[in-house]
Amino acid sequence: MGEAKQPLWEPSFNRAVKVVASDDRITSDGGLVLLREADHRLGITESLASNLYDPRDQNLTRYQLVELLRERVYGLALGYATQDDADRLAHDPAMKMAAWNRPGDQAIDERLASQPTQSRLIDILTLTPDNRATLRDVLADSCERHLRATGGDHAARRVTVDIDSFPIQVYGQQPGAAYNGYYKETVYHPLVASYSVAGTYDSAREGHRLGNGFLHAILRQGQVHTAHGIGRFMQEVVRKSKRLGQVVDFRIDAGYTDGETLDTLTDQRLRFIGRLKSNAVLERMAAPHLWRPVGRPPKGGYEEVIELGKYQAESWRHAQRVLLVIIDRPDPKTGQLNLIPDYFFLVVGWTEEELDGPEALEHYRQRGTFEDRIGEFQQAIHPRLSHTDFDANEALLRLALLAFNLGSMLRIEYEDVAGSCMDLGRFQRDVLKAGGRVVKHGRRLVLQVAKVVAPFWQRLQVCLERWRLPPRFPVPIGAQACAWRPPPSHAFMEEVRRE
Image 1 (cartoon, rainbow, N blue to C red):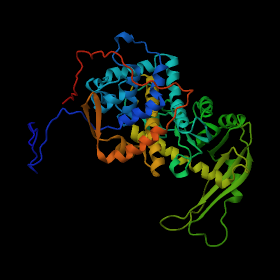
Image 2 (cartoon, helix red, strand yellow):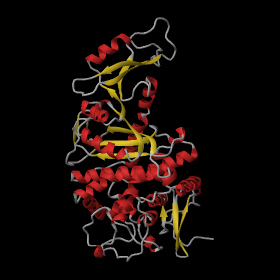
Image 3 (cartoon, rainbow, N blue to C red):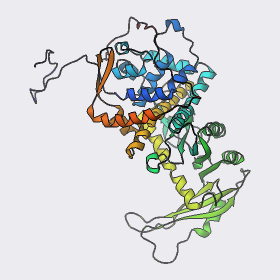
Image 4 (cartoon, rainbow, N blue to C red):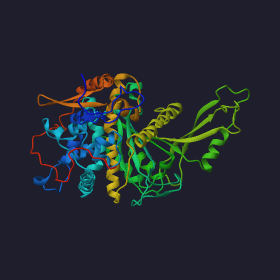
């Protein structure tokens, strides 16, 4: 049967190939429906919206607050970082089905909010101190909902919290952004905390209960020191982490092993491990151990963990256990050992009976996966902090981290059932960015997705159906019937791109 549509273009390499312009409801992001299903079962954006003050006149409002939040968070979860992406996603059929909070098939014929409306969402999120506090708590809330929905409303037996900072490069005159001499870029310098069950982010490998994600975050000026504001930040993280685990420990980098942090953790009887910056006293303690045994070294070199005993810096109120880690590896090209072995120091908040030296080193090394998570966030979510207000940029950061948490929930669920590991960028590409077409049929909306993603989606469907949100969380209401207000007269009902 021939096609009635006039070809838009006929490639010369093969006259059987025709290019036709079509108004079919086609999407390249079918996985938005998966994100909405996960979000609905946990009630994350619905709960967030219900606790925010919305100053708009609801009798004149076309877009509910929860719809604006879904449009922004789901777009970020698929890597759409710029606000201009909202103008295109407003016409995407999968985004329409996922973001609208109204039942029925009319959702597919209505456009979503444009970029200016999405900008006003950020104004609402930063309007009052209560709104800012609600957004600040949503990261921990999303983590707790997922953990308890997969674990029968039980906190994990043991939770490890990792804390670090990282740069987010900016290109304009955003307030608070500044040149950072360490990163050699103009940046913001946020501080984030992430949790993992039993100290490992690779749940599929270890067989631990699923659960990890960003727990808390603050935005800081670009030129501040790594540990700026760590005291107050730690207090908030400790409070939130106790909702997730019966026993909580912390892994921290050398920038945070100062007296204030270590004393705070010790006073609260919390376990921790962190790297210590070298100083003259520690060097003297290490000197007797920095020698090599007589004879030919083994092919792989040496690795030793030595107990140095208790050490107390002048700014510390408590003496702490310190380990010396010696890593004496041969050069990969010459096979020769270096003149002096590499070594570093760890401060450990466990006794030797609770956690011996090699176990402490292995636990600390698992922190590397947390640093991978930060890299995934930068590469897959692409946070763009381009607002002219500092509080607005902090709100954008937290929405981006919430989007990472939501996408990562699905990713780690899939990892657990498939027994394989997948970074978030690959998960976006192979599972969420599924090509499809939406068809109206019998007052229903049918999403026809590419067959290649069916095995991924079927496995995730089984996982999602096992989630049981505990009764103490409000039951997600979901789509509600309400009047459709027409868009403004200047709004395009079909996608238009500038030439």
